[in-house]
Image (tube, rainbow, N blue to C red):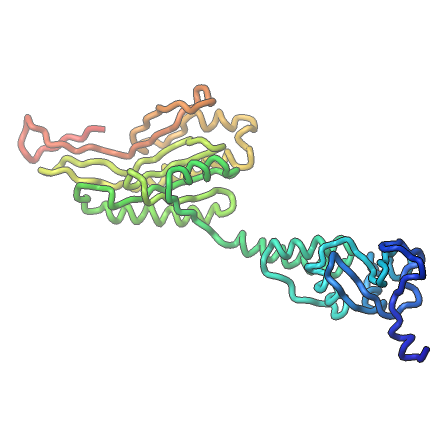
Length: 323
C-alpha cells in the first residue's frame, strides 16, 4: 500500500464483525474517520476530532468505546441536525450560530453532550445576549377578546395592570379637559410599563365598555379598579368627564407589586392590601364584589367622579357638588 493510500485509511470492520459492534482501543492508527450521526454522514480527521478535550477526542484515543457498523461507519446515536456545527467549530474555533433561541438551545444541548466546552460557552454567550435583548424591550399585549383576557390574566405569574381605553364608546360630548386627561392616562400607562418592565404585565384593552379604567390583578384575581370617567350634568345636556388621578394609579401599581413572585404569601402581604390603603381625597371608594375562594377579599373600586347638577330650587347658575 502506498503512502498516499495509507494516509486515507478509514476505520474498517474486521472480517466477521457484526453490525454495530463496539470496538475497544478507539480509532488509533486511522487518519480519516467516517461518522454516521443519526443518519447524517460526515467525513473528518482524527486531528479535527482531537482538538478539544471532548467526548470525540475520547473516542479517538480509546478512552471511550466506539461503535462501528459493517460498512466502517462510526455510529453515534444522536440527532445529526447540528453535528456539522460541532465539526466546524472544532475545525475553525468559531462558527455562526442560529438566531432562533430554540435552535440555539438545540446546539447547546449537542455541544454539552459532546463536551465541546468552547462551543458550549459560545452558545451560552449568545443565549444571554438574546435574554438581554428580550428583557430590554417592552411588549404590551393588546386585548382582542374577553376570553383571551381571562386566559392571559389567569396564567400570568406576574401582577397585571390593565388600562381599558375606548374613547369611542361614548354617546355624549366630552368636557373641555377630558381629551387632555385621557392622553395623560395613556402617557402614565406607558411610563409605568417602562419603569416596571419585567416585573408587571401591562395590557391594553381598546374594546371594553369603559372609556378610561385601570384594573389591577394579583394571583389571577382583580385586586383594585380605578375608574376615571364620570357624567357631568352642569349644562343642559350630559357630558362625559375624564379625570387623571395620577397619585391613586401610581399607588395601586405599587400595591400590586406585593403579589410579585408570590410575595403576597409573606408576613403581612395580604393584610396590607386588604386594608384598603387610600389617599385622602383620592375619590369615592366602593368595596364590593367578593372574589370566589377569597373569603372576605374584595375588589377596591375607586371611582374618581363628581356629578355636577343644577339646583332646581335656586337660580339657574347655582350648582351643587355631590360626591
